Image 1 (cartoon, rainbow, N blue to C red):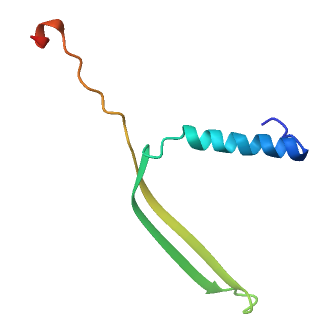
Image 2 (cartoon, one colour):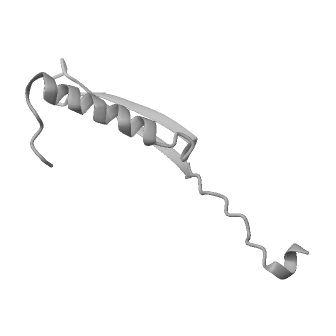
Image 3 (tube, rainbow, N blue to C red):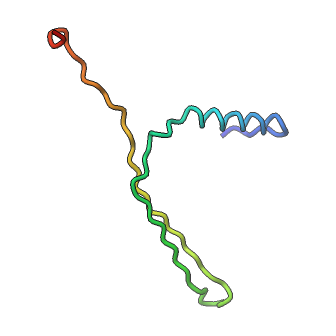
Amino acid sequence: MAEQGKGFFGWLGRQIGYVKKAVETDPAAEKKVYENTTIEESVHPANPNIKLRRTTIDEAIEKQTKRIEPQMNADERG
């Protein structure tokens, strides 16, 4: 990755890039059909004052494909 610009104009350029990408991205391209969040907590074995936490997120995402209409030959058009 190229080195990021420094200063105000570098920051401004990054913000414009973020907005440009957001505008070009198709929000209907992917659809989340399933999400399950699991949180596990346990006490640290060596130090009971420390709590260990693990968060697992399971997701199933359906990728939308563009629907292609079948092409009609000159004979089929009638």
